[in-house]
Length: 494
Image (spheres, rainbow, N blue to C red):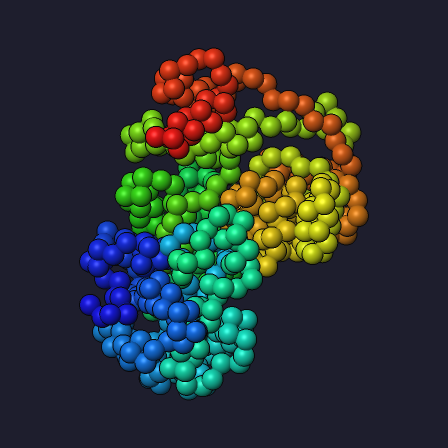
């Protein structure tokens, strides 16, 4: 094995701290025999050394890249920079601790005028080749900050440096600060052979959760997009299609996806968030990780997984905490006023809950006003990583575009912020008005509607958790949130 470049063949035995979450998930999937495009990684130690050397990568790192690319070529039959059968790659960041939307990705790297022409001739589709080039240029300019050079190897060098630099981007630093994550870990750089969801009418890309990350139902949940690639689904810029439609259009790929999902959930002993691409009917998995989910789903999944024998009672209790349980027990809109309430927007549920506040469409203003204690609803066409600081402070988030696996949805579930996505044009025109966001049902109402407390003792999953918490703490004299706090204190003190 090389000193710096780590081939992800399923046999490295290396841990997440060195490989980073993205490369580690590739390694785990390959060890399970799941179809994954070949890849290699520069470990997090390379990132740490990069900063110790005053943002310089030593020559020996660069010297190892040709052999690593040759290894990808041996699997794919394509060669990086070749003008007949070109190999394109993705360059992705990946820290040991999941930081959704915080780091950087460049797809289709290795394309230039000659490679674009080769792709067009090979497929007979100049539009596909041009679309692939356009996507690369847009991402490269966004991440690296300049138009890409013609030389594929120089593109690769610049992309690797940009990914390493993303570890200390403003948004990544803020994300780690808000969550108490150390700045010392560094990011790995994963280089992976491209597969193309934008290739033809039997190609697409999607996101699958092995269980519903919103409601907590024990059923697969996801979205996909025909002719899609990369971040088309998660960016929220396109309205993705329901996963059931994939079963109708490509039943073989769908069946293979479901089988892989079950295998990964069993191996990971947790609900998985899976990114996949279908290229001309052939399924490829790109990443898997433990799913970010709503408070409601966290509670439901903990109980489900224990009942199915995947985790123990102690592990189930470890996966919930007092704040999550209290969130599930929060008030909801008084049903007696809904008959006359004025609905001003309707979209898809992204993170359950109810929020009341004034609509602000400017991210900086929303962050400032929320920091000053105002109840703010951030309304945007879509959100992106630069919006996360504001999203972590506001009472609710609404977007005009996107689905339940979009950036806004995923981040709000992690933050436990009520969120409605895909409301359509016009939501931003509510700026300055007070609204009530019923994210449990995907509806936004005009004005501040009255709330009522939930009924006690009518939730079987909470009752089950209460019974487990009472048994493990040896007391029946406290509420479930209090018992969870007592249990956490006992664990902390040994």
